[in-house]
Amino acid sequence: MITSYLAILPEILLIILAAIVLVYGRHPKGDRKRGVGLLSSWGVFVVLLVTAGLSFAGVPGEVPQEIWGGMFRNDAFTLVFRTMFVMAALVTCMLTVDVPRLQHGEWYALVMLATVGFNLMAAAGDMIILYLALETASISFYVLSGYATDGRRSPEAGIKYFVYGAFASAVMLYGLSFLYGITGETNISLLTQAVLGNISQPMLLLSTILVVAGFGFKVSAVPFHFWSPDVYEGAPTSTTAILSTASKAAGFAVFLRLFMSGAVGNPSNQNWWVMVVVMSILSMVLGNMAALWQTNIKRLLAYSGIAQAGYLLIGLVTYSVDGTGSILFYLYMYVFTNIAAFGVVILLSRVTGSDEIEDLNGLSRRSPYLAIVMLLALLSLGGIPPAAGFFGKLFIFRAAVEAGFWWLALIGLINAFIALFYYLSVAKHMYLYRSDDEEQPIPVSRAAALALGICTLGILYLGIVPSAVFDWTRLAAQVFF
Amino acid sequence: MQVTIEWYIALSTILFTIGALGVLVRRNAIIIFMSVELMLNSANLLLVAFAQQLADAHGQVLVFFVMTVAAAEVAIGLALIVVIFRTKNTIDIGEINLLKG
Image (cartoon, rainbow over all chains, first blue to last red; front, side):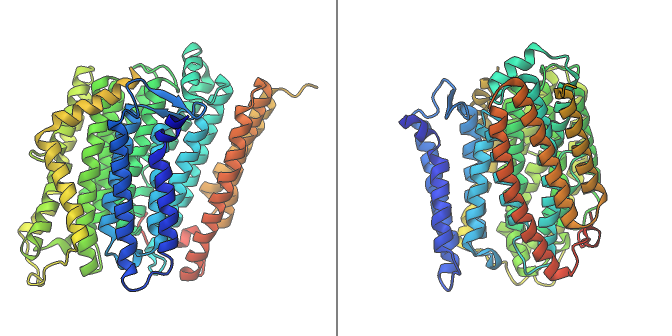
């Protein structure tokens, strides 16, 4: 009994923390304005320690457990994603401490509740909890996107995300209800056994298409990507930082849970995998092509995120331990990298009041350290050593070649080269162009500096000694095979 | 005449299509919300019908959760509409075009 509670202790603590922050952060004044963010950061840090402590104490153990009536699967896969999400929430909270318009308890509480949703998505063992967790995260993000009600863009981003998001989750629910009708089960592992017994059902194909559409939306893969540039641009940058990383990673967690186990059809390379391959290629090509023309840094990162979803889908197609492990590794590097990039944008746009690429002009003279963090993030996104992105891409492409998808790896490689063009053109703005404000450095608070430091260390660590983390993610990937 | 499971599947498909078309075609935010509700409820209908046919309670349990989530979703959606209306004086999705789309 006690192990059942221990297994969800991080989530329980996050909910308690959200309640505390809500009470403490009600109409904060004076010192409390920063206090809300600091309290949240420390709280989430404690949750991170608890998660790590639990894993050392043997929760989850070697053998995957299904607890709470099959709702919650506690295995290495859950642990990998839970650590990732809590870390993303921690770094985002730290970066937001000094953003004036987000210094309210509600913002931080919603981030924590969304994190609970992500954790449960990664751990879902049942359709019911899967849907609930997805909606917990989504509904929190509708509010987080529309949070800055003083501006005009933020509510617009909120309502756009809401309309598309509600549509996508309704489509997905319809697919899940067909899946239930075919199998008569809501538990994913029982459902999988039933599906593998009767594959030829046309209803199964229909439900697969609907479910793929729902999660394609979550991970912003083409053709379900159209919301992401608008929402990323309009939402407060702190929201975008966690939306673009943790939310995408949670989408992939569920993708892997459903697809690798075979809940939506036998995982072979022939039949409906074609759909994922097409999505992958379209995401890479369209994402990179559209990113070439962007003048707004947040939109550029949004399109780059669409392309990154394409690379990640390659790993899904391989259906191997290496492929799945490399997806998890890639998501880790993506969390650090993208939050670092958005972190610099958060600090910069507080001074300039906008988020155009031109604002980065002369950043290397203005704030050399910020420029280095941004450069490292861009190198990582582009896949250049010593940043983590190099190994992320290498592992995925290697897994694809080993599984016989050398042509898909080739398309990915060509796209990675195209992507370098726009990543390096941002670097050009920072290092080669001049601006008139070079004498005024960007103010960076201690909390934000620490957060960017964590991200930088993460990028360098994964880029220089990737084997430790890759072995860990491969171990987690083995729960499916 | 016997009402079989196919009838329910057909009805829910019709409702789902009406809802999906409503989201895609209509421009009034409130109507779009109603259409989303229709889509969710078509899935609910399907779940209940399947649960009845399979004599299994899981589907019905899921329906309760879906209804709860739908209520929460509408609360958030209406709040967002109020915020939008304050700044723009319209709830026409076509007019909400500050972001390039």
